[in-house]
Image (cartoon, rainbow, N blue to C red; front, side):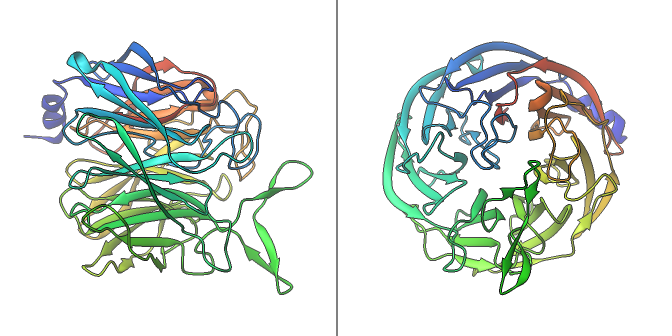
Length: 417
């Protein structure tokens, strides 16, 4: 059967998609996903917690997308019984029962244990260990970047006392991105973006350098210090052992995404090195990374390549560029990554009010999600107030099939089935 025929056969089933609005009064938008990839909003369910709204606590900007610099703020448990979401505004987590027709019922909302210091917290990303029923809740700011919760059998949440940091003695203000759990649940891999929050020039542009011993020093994590990827051993009860601070292979190792059929392999997306690399993790939690395969950076550096989606057959990776406001596709062949379509879709314009780190006007492309059959990719363009769905083509390009209006600038997180 040809690739075209295979994809046509796969596109016979629909499903459901969930996104959090991250509004001050946070809610989950539930979409029905039709067999042709189109989306229809079914319901909005309050989380019982607060988002940050249009405020971006990581940078202090009043109106900016990508509020928390993270992925997986909305997840489903593997058995699809529960949906869990962060509430970054008040550092809480909400749990929902997933019922008939994918409908949601709020079960619980609990604080993570990190105090909100200022206008907003930064709880943002989730990973889940089914064997111990442990939720790992990532926060952009520490010192406790990772906090634990137990997702009880009835779906309620029990906060736990443990907290873990990605800071070092010389880097006490690191910005963590997200955490990914290995398939055997033995290691938690945590990405970072900055060794300290960026400050602004008088014109609002970010300062990505600090002076150390009279020499300019990049604040992008892992550049030049090779310690930007942290691997924590996971104990049987979900608690973490001492983290191994390792070379992430490039500047700002933002997103670790594990392959589906080779559980010791994962791809790293680099927000500042502007590309992807293949990595492996061994039985001791030691990471080895391959070369960074860069995208075209003629629009300016960095591209802020942040979000990743790996196809279910491990043949494709789709990388979202926050700064460029479009997606690129990569082929995965063994341990080799090659750029397939760059860009894979047209740039989506925003409303003209937001500029990325490279100075380009951007729609702030955020979280993405790939359907379980690999047929449709959904992408948040928060500054454009759009959630766009694309049909994946045999050559790795993306063809728009649906677009729905979403709240302005604030939305975060996608999950579905």
